[in-house]
Amino acid sequence: MRTLHAISSIDKIHRHALILLVLAVLAPACGGGGGGGSSGGGGAGVFTGDYHRMSFTGQSTTNIGRIGTSVFSGVDYIEAGISNNNGTIDSMVDSGTFAVSGADFTFAATGPFSFSGGVRPDRSMAISAPVSAGPPTFVVDLRKGACSDATLSGTYFIVGYGFELSGSTNYSYTGTLTSDGAGAWTFSATFNLNGTITPGVTNSGPYFIESDGSMTLLPATGGAITGGVLEGGDVFVMSATSSTGVPEVAVGIRKGGSFSNASMSGAYHGISFGSSPSVAASHFTLTKNANFSGTGVLTWTATQNLEGAIGAIPLQTEAYSIAADGTFTITGGLTFNGGVLAGGNVAIAAAVTAAGYMEIRVYVRS
Image 1 (cartoon, rainbow, N blue to C red):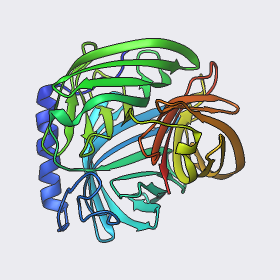
Image 2 (image 1 turned 120 degrees about the horizontal axis):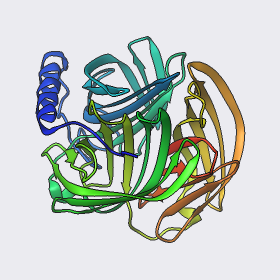
Image 3 (image 1 turned 90 degrees about the vertical axis):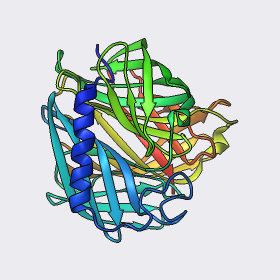
Image 4 (image 1 turned 180 degrees about the horizontal axis):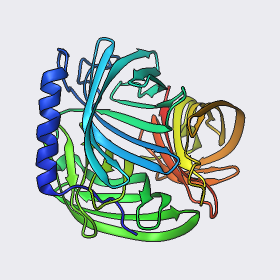
Protein backbone atom coordinates (compact mmCIF):
# COMPACT_ATOMS: atom_id res chain seq x y z
CA MET A 1 0.00 0.00 0.00
CA ARG A 2 1.40 3.38 -1.02
CA THR A 3 0.09 6.41 0.79
CA LEU A 4 0.44 10.18 0.51
CA HIS A 5 2.28 9.88 -2.81
CA ALA A 6 2.70 12.97 -5.00
CA ILE A 7 4.84 14.97 -7.44
CA SER A 8 8.58 15.26 -7.98
CA SER A 9 10.47 18.45 -7.05
CA ILE A 10 10.73 19.47 -10.72
CA ASP A 11 6.99 18.93 -11.21
CA LYS A 12 6.36 21.03 -8.11
CA ILE A 13 8.30 23.99 -9.53
CA HIS A 14 6.39 23.73 -12.79
CA ARG A 15 3.07 23.52 -10.94
CA HIS A 16 3.78 26.64 -8.90
CA ALA A 17 4.80 28.53 -12.04
CA LEU A 18 1.59 27.48 -13.79
CA ILE A 19 -0.65 28.49 -10.89
CA LEU A 20 1.02 31.87 -10.47
CA LEU A 21 0.72 32.57 -14.21
CA VAL A 22 -2.96 31.62 -14.35
CA LEU A 23 -3.84 33.63 -11.25
CA ALA A 24 -1.94 36.66 -12.53
CA VAL A 25 -3.93 36.56 -15.78
CA LEU A 26 -7.36 35.68 -14.38
CA ALA A 27 -7.55 36.96 -10.81
CA PRO A 28 -9.64 40.04 -10.05
CA ALA A 29 -8.37 42.59 -7.57
CA CYS A 30 -8.92 41.08 -4.14
CA GLY A 31 -8.13 43.72 -1.55
CA GLY A 32 -5.64 42.55 1.00
CA GLY A 33 -5.00 39.19 -0.66
CA GLY A 34 -4.15 36.18 1.45
CA GLY A 35 -4.30 37.45 5.01
CA GLY A 36 -4.38 34.48 7.32
CA GLY A 37 -5.32 32.71 10.49
CA SER A 38 -8.05 34.24 12.57
CA SER A 39 -7.82 37.82 11.41
CA GLY A 40 -6.15 38.07 7.99
CA GLY A 41 -7.66 38.61 4.56
CA GLY A 42 -9.86 41.43 5.79
CA GLY A 43 -10.44 40.13 9.32
CA ALA A 44 -12.97 37.91 11.03
CA GLY A 45 -16.34 37.96 9.30
CA VAL A 46 -14.87 38.59 5.83
CA PHE A 47 -14.40 35.82 3.26
CA THR A 48 -12.05 37.19 0.64
CA GLY A 49 -8.53 36.70 -0.70
CA ASP A 50 -6.34 33.73 -1.54
CA TYR A 51 -7.09 30.24 -0.19
CA HIS A 52 -5.45 26.84 -0.44
CA ARG A 53 -8.06 24.55 -2.06
CA MET A 54 -8.04 20.77 -1.78
CA SER A 55 -10.72 18.59 -3.36
CA PHE A 56 -11.45 14.98 -4.25
CA THR A 57 -13.93 13.78 -6.89
CA GLY A 58 -15.12 10.24 -7.39
CA GLN A 59 -17.65 8.86 -9.86
CA SER A 60 -17.94 5.36 -11.32
CA THR A 61 -14.26 4.30 -11.73
CA THR A 62 -12.88 7.86 -11.84
CA ASN A 63 -10.95 9.26 -8.85
CA ILE A 64 -9.50 12.78 -9.00
CA GLY A 65 -7.47 14.51 -6.30
CA ARG A 66 -6.65 18.23 -6.65
CA ILE A 67 -4.59 20.88 -4.89
CA GLY A 68 -4.23 24.55 -5.80
CA THR A 69 -5.32 28.10 -5.07
CA SER A 70 -8.76 29.70 -5.00
CA VAL A 71 -9.14 33.48 -5.08
CA PHE A 72 -12.39 34.91 -3.68
CA SER A 73 -13.40 38.50 -4.45
CA GLY A 74 -16.83 40.07 -4.10
CA VAL A 75 -19.12 37.37 -5.48
CA ASP A 76 -16.61 35.77 -7.87
CA TYR A 77 -13.94 33.12 -7.44
CA ILE A 78 -11.29 31.51 -9.61
CA GLU A 79 -9.32 28.34 -9.00
CA ALA A 80 -6.07 27.08 -10.50
CA GLY A 81 -4.30 23.88 -9.55
CA ILE A 82 -3.05 20.45 -10.45
CA SER A 83 -5.17 17.29 -10.68
CA ASN A 84 -4.48 13.57 -10.47
CA ASN A 85 -7.08 11.62 -12.45
CA ASN A 86 -6.33 7.96 -11.69
CA GLY A 87 -2.62 8.70 -12.06
CA THR A 88 -2.88 11.08 -15.03
CA ILE A 89 -1.57 14.52 -14.08
CA ASP A 90 -2.94 17.73 -15.58
CA SER A 91 -3.40 21.39 -14.75
CA MET A 92 -6.89 22.73 -14.14
CA VAL A 93 -8.68 26.07 -13.84
CA ASP A 94 -12.22 26.89 -12.85
CA SER A 95 -14.29 29.94 -12.01
CA GLY A 96 -17.71 30.82 -10.75
CA THR A 97 -19.61 32.67 -8.06
CA PHE A 98 -19.84 32.23 -4.30
CA ALA A 99 -21.74 33.55 -1.31
CA VAL A 100 -21.25 33.57 2.46
CA SER A 101 -24.31 34.25 4.60
CA GLY A 102 -23.76 33.83 8.31
CA ALA A 103 -22.15 30.40 8.63
CA ASP A 104 -23.42 29.18 5.23
CA PHE A 105 -21.03 28.86 2.27
CA THR A 106 -22.22 28.22 -1.30
CA PHE A 107 -20.56 28.36 -4.69
CA ALA A 108 -21.45 27.60 -8.29
CA ALA A 109 -18.73 26.02 -10.44
CA THR A 110 -18.41 25.36 -14.16
CA GLY A 111 -20.86 22.64 -15.14
CA PRO A 112 -22.95 24.19 -13.75
CA PHE A 113 -22.57 22.50 -10.36
CA SER A 114 -23.87 23.93 -7.08
CA PHE A 115 -21.99 23.36 -3.82
CA SER A 116 -23.11 23.99 -0.25
CA GLY A 117 -21.43 23.86 3.14
CA GLY A 118 -20.15 26.11 5.88
CA VAL A 119 -17.41 28.45 7.04
CA ARG A 120 -15.39 28.45 10.25
CA PRO A 121 -16.52 31.35 12.47
CA ASP A 122 -13.35 33.35 11.71
CA ARG A 123 -13.79 32.75 7.94
CA SER A 124 -10.37 31.12 7.68
CA MET A 125 -11.79 27.79 6.47
CA ALA A 126 -14.69 26.62 4.32
CA ILE A 127 -16.05 23.14 3.59
CA SER A 128 -18.48 22.20 0.82
CA ALA A 129 -19.91 19.40 -1.32
CA PRO A 130 -22.25 19.34 -4.35
CA VAL A 131 -26.02 19.63 -3.98
CA SER A 132 -26.79 19.42 -7.71
CA ALA A 133 -26.39 16.64 -10.26
CA GLY A 134 -22.69 16.14 -11.00
CA PRO A 135 -19.80 14.10 -9.65
CA PRO A 136 -19.53 13.68 -5.84
CA THR A 137 -16.79 16.11 -4.73
CA PHE A 138 -15.35 16.99 -1.33
CA VAL A 139 -13.84 20.51 -1.00
CA VAL A 140 -11.86 22.28 1.75
CA ASP A 141 -10.55 25.86 1.48
CA LEU A 142 -7.95 27.33 3.90
CA ARG A 143 -6.99 31.01 3.89
CA LYS A 144 -3.37 31.68 2.95
CA GLY A 145 -1.13 33.63 5.35
CA ALA A 146 2.41 34.13 6.57
CA CYS A 147 4.05 30.78 7.43
CA SER A 148 7.39 29.02 7.82
CA ASP A 149 8.61 25.52 8.64
CA ALA A 150 7.89 26.29 12.31
CA THR A 151 4.18 26.77 11.53
CA LEU A 152 3.68 23.01 11.19
CA SER A 153 4.53 21.97 14.73
CA GLY A 154 3.11 19.37 17.10
CA THR A 155 0.87 16.36 16.66
CA TYR A 156 -2.09 16.50 14.31
CA PHE A 157 -5.17 14.35 13.97
CA ILE A 158 -5.39 13.42 10.27
CA VAL A 159 -7.97 11.76 8.00
CA GLY A 160 -7.61 10.91 4.33
CA TYR A 161 -9.30 9.29 1.35
CA GLY A 162 -7.75 7.85 -1.79
CA PHE A 163 -7.69 5.31 -4.60
CA GLU A 164 -5.11 2.51 -4.73
CA LEU A 165 -4.19 2.22 -8.42
CA SER A 166 -2.52 -1.18 -8.23
CA GLY A 167 -5.51 -2.82 -6.57
CA SER A 168 -8.21 -0.59 -8.09
CA THR A 169 -9.73 -0.07 -4.63
CA ASN A 170 -10.67 2.93 -2.52
CA TYR A 171 -9.49 3.53 1.03
CA SER A 172 -9.83 5.94 3.93
CA TYR A 173 -7.70 6.36 7.04
CA THR A 174 -7.44 8.07 10.39
CA GLY A 175 -4.40 8.65 12.55
CA THR A 176 -1.79 11.20 13.53
CA LEU A 177 0.98 13.19 11.87
CA THR A 178 3.67 14.64 14.14
CA SER A 179 5.94 17.48 13.02
CA ASP A 180 8.95 18.85 14.91
CA GLY A 181 8.54 22.38 13.51
CA ALA A 182 12.02 22.14 12.01
CA GLY A 183 11.55 20.05 8.88
CA ALA A 184 10.80 16.48 10.00
CA TRP A 185 7.52 14.55 10.34
CA THR A 186 6.20 11.08 11.15
CA PHE A 187 2.84 9.50 10.31
CA SER A 188 0.87 6.60 11.82
CA ALA A 189 -2.66 5.60 10.84
CA THR A 190 -5.34 2.94 10.70
CA PHE A 191 -6.43 2.23 7.13
CA ASN A 192 -9.77 1.04 5.80
CA LEU A 193 -8.77 -0.49 2.46
CA ASN A 194 -11.86 -1.75 0.64
CA GLY A 195 -13.44 -2.62 4.00
CA THR A 196 -10.37 -4.30 5.50
CA ILE A 197 -9.06 -2.51 8.61
CA THR A 198 -5.26 -2.28 8.90
CA PRO A 199 -3.74 -0.43 11.88
CA GLY A 200 -0.15 0.71 12.24
CA VAL A 201 0.58 2.06 8.73
CA THR A 202 3.55 4.44 9.09
CA ASN A 203 5.65 6.85 7.06
CA SER A 204 8.08 9.72 7.72
CA GLY A 205 10.37 12.22 6.07
CA PRO A 206 11.35 15.89 5.72
CA TYR A 207 9.09 18.80 4.83
CA PHE A 208 9.25 22.48 3.97
CA ILE A 209 6.69 25.29 4.03
CA GLU A 210 6.73 28.36 1.83
CA SER A 211 5.94 31.88 3.01
CA ASP A 212 2.25 31.67 1.99
CA GLY A 213 1.70 28.31 3.73
CA SER A 214 2.16 26.09 0.68
CA MET A 215 3.73 22.88 1.95
CA THR A 216 5.65 19.89 0.64
CA LEU A 217 6.28 16.62 2.48
CA LEU A 218 8.82 14.08 1.21
CA PRO A 219 7.88 10.59 2.45
CA ALA A 220 10.41 7.82 2.92
CA THR A 221 7.95 5.70 0.90
CA GLY A 222 6.45 7.43 -2.13
CA GLY A 223 6.89 10.81 -3.78
CA ALA A 224 6.34 14.35 -2.56
CA ILE A 225 3.03 15.48 -1.03
CA THR A 226 1.81 19.04 -1.60
CA GLY A 227 -0.75 21.12 0.23
CA GLY A 228 -1.31 24.15 2.40
CA VAL A 229 -1.33 25.05 6.08
CA LEU A 230 -3.37 27.75 7.80
CA GLU A 231 -1.44 30.63 9.38
CA GLY A 232 -0.83 29.62 12.98
CA GLY A 233 -0.67 25.96 11.98
CA ASP A 234 -4.02 24.71 13.34
CA VAL A 235 -5.25 23.09 10.10
CA PHE A 236 -3.67 21.72 6.92
CA VAL A 237 -4.82 20.09 3.68
CA MET A 238 -2.82 17.88 1.32
CA SER A 239 -3.17 16.11 -2.01
CA ALA A 240 -1.06 13.59 -3.93
CA THR A 241 -0.49 14.56 -7.56
CA SER A 242 2.12 12.24 -9.03
CA SER A 243 1.81 10.27 -12.25
CA THR A 244 3.20 7.27 -10.36
CA GLY A 245 1.18 7.89 -7.21
CA VAL A 246 -2.33 7.35 -5.96
CA PRO A 247 -5.02 10.06 -6.04
CA GLU A 248 -5.37 10.94 -2.36
CA VAL A 249 -6.36 13.87 -0.14
CA ALA A 250 -6.00 14.52 3.59
CA VAL A 251 -7.11 17.00 6.26
CA GLY A 252 -5.23 17.55 9.51
CA ILE A 253 -6.02 19.49 12.70
CA ARG A 254 -3.61 20.20 15.54
CA LYS A 255 -3.94 18.11 18.68
CA GLY A 256 -3.93 19.97 21.99
CA GLY A 257 -6.12 21.29 24.76
CA SER A 258 -8.52 19.75 27.28
CA PHE A 259 -11.84 18.32 26.10
CA SER A 260 -15.10 16.65 27.02
CA ASN A 261 -18.34 15.92 25.18
CA ALA A 262 -19.36 19.51 25.93
CA SER A 263 -16.51 20.75 23.71
CA MET A 264 -18.83 20.27 20.73
CA SER A 265 -22.26 21.73 21.34
CA GLY A 266 -24.81 23.31 19.02
CA ALA A 267 -25.07 23.68 15.25
CA TYR A 268 -22.35 22.55 12.82
CA HIS A 269 -21.97 22.17 9.09
CA GLY A 270 -20.51 18.87 7.98
CA ILE A 271 -19.35 17.17 4.79
CA SER A 272 -18.61 13.51 4.09
CA PHE A 273 -16.97 11.66 1.23
CA GLY A 274 -17.14 7.90 0.93
CA SER A 275 -17.71 4.71 -1.06
CA SER A 276 -18.74 1.09 -0.53
CA PRO A 277 -16.28 -1.81 -0.48
CA SER A 278 -15.90 -3.61 -3.82
CA VAL A 279 -18.52 -1.41 -5.54
CA ALA A 280 -16.88 0.74 -8.22
CA ALA A 281 -19.83 3.09 -8.79
CA SER A 282 -20.64 3.91 -5.16
CA HIS A 283 -19.03 7.29 -4.44
CA PHE A 284 -21.11 9.66 -2.36
CA THR A 285 -20.94 13.00 -0.60
CA LEU A 286 -23.12 14.34 2.20
CA THR A 287 -23.67 18.02 2.97
CA LYS A 288 -24.97 18.09 6.52
CA ASN A 289 -26.73 20.29 9.01
CA ALA A 290 -25.61 18.72 12.26
CA ASN A 291 -26.27 19.33 15.95
CA PHE A 292 -24.08 18.17 18.81
CA SER A 293 -25.93 18.01 22.14
CA GLY A 294 -22.87 18.62 24.32
CA THR A 295 -23.77 15.38 26.12
CA GLY A 296 -22.95 12.76 23.49
CA VAL A 297 -25.82 12.83 20.98
CA LEU A 298 -25.26 13.84 17.35
CA THR A 299 -28.22 14.44 15.04
CA TRP A 300 -28.09 15.47 11.39
CA THR A 301 -29.93 15.79 8.11
CA ALA A 302 -28.16 15.93 4.75
CA THR A 303 -28.28 16.34 1.01
CA GLN A 304 -26.65 13.30 -0.58
CA ASN A 305 -24.92 13.09 -3.94
CA LEU A 306 -24.68 9.41 -4.86
CA GLU A 307 -22.83 9.05 -8.16
CA GLY A 308 -24.50 12.26 -9.33
CA ALA A 309 -28.03 11.48 -8.07
CA ILE A 310 -29.27 14.01 -5.50
CA GLY A 311 -31.44 12.94 -2.56
CA ALA A 312 -32.40 14.00 0.94
CA ILE A 313 -31.24 12.07 4.01
CA PRO A 314 -33.80 12.35 6.84
CA LEU A 315 -32.92 12.93 10.48
CA GLN A 316 -30.15 10.59 11.70
CA THR A 317 -29.04 10.03 15.28
CA GLU A 318 -25.56 8.87 16.33
CA ALA A 319 -23.57 8.87 19.55
CA TYR A 320 -20.30 10.73 19.97
CA SER A 321 -17.60 10.95 22.61
CA ILE A 322 -14.63 13.27 23.02
CA ALA A 323 -11.73 12.11 25.19
CA ALA A 324 -9.74 14.51 27.34
CA ASP A 325 -7.00 14.75 24.67
CA GLY A 326 -9.48 15.59 21.88
CA THR A 327 -9.79 12.10 20.42
CA PHE A 328 -13.20 12.00 18.72
CA THR A 329 -15.41 8.93 18.25
CA ILE A 330 -18.78 8.63 16.52
CA THR A 331 -20.83 5.44 16.76
CA GLY A 332 -24.03 4.42 15.00
CA GLY A 333 -24.25 2.06 12.07
CA LEU A 334 -20.48 2.58 11.67
CA THR A 335 -17.67 3.68 13.99
CA PHE A 336 -15.61 6.78 13.16
CA ASN A 337 -12.37 7.88 14.83
CA GLY A 338 -10.65 11.27 14.60
CA GLY A 339 -10.10 14.42 16.60
CA VAL A 340 -11.35 17.84 17.67
CA LEU A 341 -9.49 21.14 17.35
CA ALA A 342 -9.02 23.25 20.49
CA GLY A 343 -12.07 25.46 20.89
CA GLY A 344 -14.31 22.82 19.29
CA ASN A 345 -15.01 24.63 16.01
CA VAL A 346 -13.43 21.98 13.73
CA ALA A 347 -13.54 18.17 13.96
CA ILE A 348 -12.54 15.34 11.61
CA ALA A 349 -13.16 11.58 11.57
CA ALA A 350 -12.93 8.51 9.33
CA ALA A 351 -14.77 5.18 9.33
CA VAL A 352 -12.94 2.22 10.88
CA THR A 353 -15.66 -0.47 10.72
CA ALA A 354 -14.63 -3.69 9.00
CA ALA A 355 -16.62 -4.24 5.77
CA GLY A 356 -18.14 -0.77 6.23
CA TYR A 357 -17.93 2.33 4.08
CA MET A 358 -14.61 4.03 3.40
CA GLU A 359 -15.65 7.49 4.57
CA ILE A 360 -14.17 10.71 5.95
CA ARG A 361 -16.01 13.57 7.65
CA VAL A 362 -15.19 17.22 8.42
CA TYR A 363 -17.29 19.43 10.71
CA VAL A 364 -17.11 23.21 11.30
CA ARG A 365 -19.12 25.10 13.90
CA SER A 366 -21.97 27.21 12.50
